[in-house]
Image 1: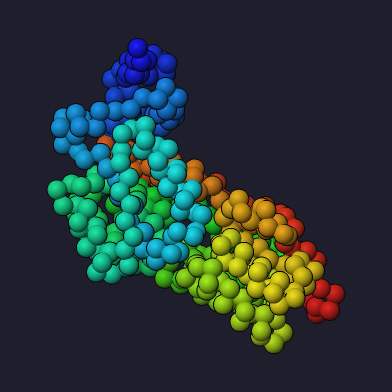
Image 2 (image 1 turned 90 degrees about the vertical axis):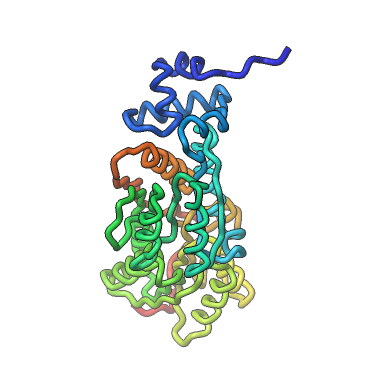
Length: 343
């Protein structure tokens, strides 16, 4: 005979709490301390407990589904490891609480608005995660008006009724510039993401602030975060008169492309050019030379975002959570500035 599936009673016994508290935690209802909720979810995951979704939906009137609408091209999403890790983090939490993740890719504008409206029809989802916040982001009042719970990655620059989970990624860019300046670099460039995205602008502003504070020269080029545009930006930077001796990229994806461009041009990294990335992806650690990169824990960010959204769906109060600031992982793609660089 097969092994009997674990029950809520088993989870409660292992976690040392009541069955009622386990039910509250697994259903994302308020009244459960964050550390207790985390312990219960971890025990449920260890025991392999799975909920009866149909029964819970009928009894609560909820869909037990959460939406993630990504406003980037499908090609960029497919190639960017950040989203893979972030979604894995969401699933870490949703899988043990019985949530289904509904993923959609939509171009910003009418298509995106229609996607959110479609998710709200007949409560196809209970809540959504808002990523890649934009200046004066219209999605915040849209989602609020649709009556959906939500959590934002980052803090919007407009009034928001939603909880947020943020990371000071500007600190990582500042650390990268300080590291390069300490190595003697005085001409630097930044391959940035779209200006309309708040986190991209924050990284660009941090770059220019750090360069100015160091008395160095800096320039930046806007891209869509893709490898293709990262490579094109690198070509333009390296072809310019008085080319920089260091390039700070806004993600590892573009930094990897930039490294390839430099090597095809006969430029030796880091002897002739230093390169830094952002996100500290696994692939960057195995390049030659290994990539110096700003570290972020996208999977942990996904887990925290999922827990925060579940709490919001359960009626919890709005919160602002600040995760640890990003730091710089030093590897072989950065080195002393070339000897011929003027100070």
